[in-house]
Length: 69
Image (cartoon, rainbow, N blue to C red):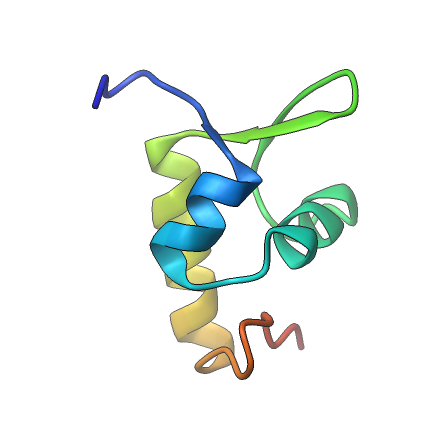
């Protein structure tokens, strides 16, 4: 994969076993880092790293959803 490539919420969701809808909702709320192009959410490798650190910090996701404090 190109290190500069941006992934869709569906791709990140599959990779991290999280709901793409939850990723989009949390990105829209400003909780998760992302890039937005119109109505499309995209995530870089550094965004994914931050999402992983966030999920480790707030606790293990249950049922594919992020636990947001």
